[in-house]
Image 1 (tube, one colour):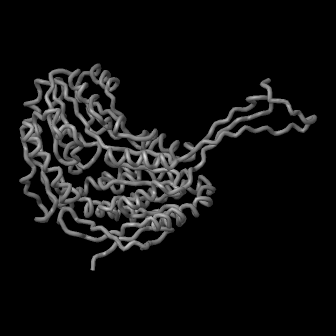
Image 2 (cartoon, helix red, strand yellow):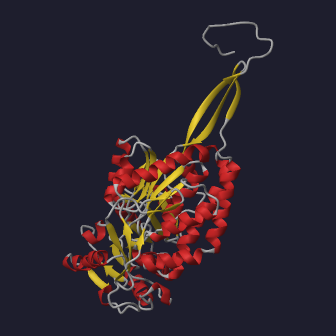
Image 3 (tube, rainbow, N blue to C red):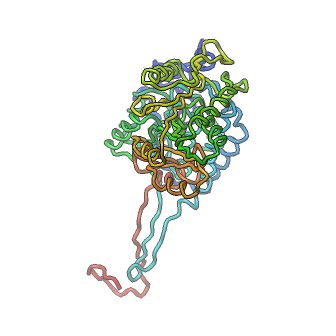
Length: 497
């Protein structure tokens, strides 16, 4: 009998009322490893009510206690990271080293959250008027909802819930139904770290459970990472229901290569950024914009490096694993046909890859396509797979115009040895995260992550200073304490003095 993964509510497994389930695959084998329950609206309400009931006591817990839980969680996560990495490899397909890297990047935000006391400080001004002081405090929102994607089942939830919890909120997480087990593993670890029951809850599901969170009157905010169409839907629906929203959407990240760049560094970076995690990440480089005359040499170097990549089961020491599902693999592979039809040149075709894994695994090898027309869907769509496009331009200005003309504004990179050109680029490009000779410019945990344009809906980026402001609301207090020599009642309007 296939194992069924339950929800997590009030510190324990919770089956709920739903009879619907969805398959969870091992992508390297192409086989179902378990089923996951899909929550009903009532199941989501049960989780929200558990979080609501836990909020008063948790929000009034000392900052020191909340900080201590984060410290304990960090130590447990670090000591047992191999466990969750194995879960990620089994359900997502990413190679073990990539899975461990995901956990490490998520742990940065846990470490950021351990410093929450300093970040929760308000401000005070004494004697704004005679005997009157004004000060501000930051207070938790209440129950916060998190909806996370399949590509980083541990890291993306870790972008949000450590800060939310440390600030005094309670959480309902809806992970991707494609790889949900890491969320339950983290819930169990939080309980072991001393987190009270009900502060962190997990409900699995599909659109029914997502909409239930977006519409629930007791959910104060929604944090989301996913595709742009869904991010826009999340933002519009949750905002309409009176919630604070941070919804991070899709991307089409460009790497601009100037003629003076170190092409060996560029080739290494393009391969790492284009094919790591099988290209299933919003910060992947998907377009190399080569300022002539470097394109031919660069393509030769990239092709040479691609020939040494191994594709297979993530537990076997390969460089790249499978895609998440057969349907997604087929969709990504279909773009290669689109490229051919649009007149592009397929330099390396990943459809015939010989993978070191199951015969039915969801395999697609690294793919390199040259001379991609900017009108092609291969250029304009977020492919979200191991497909790297090359667009040739004549000048820096032409390359910059391409990047700034994109609907997306998530991440970008420039490769050059010219400091003036790099400085000009970082000022002129309309993108939220910029790398200079760095292909994947994901900020460290004490900065904030997020793009511009159709890559971010809402006003707050993920983690870092933005997250503290997002998961708290400011209260200003105007205070007067009467002097013992106070001489009577004065009903006049307050005067500055």
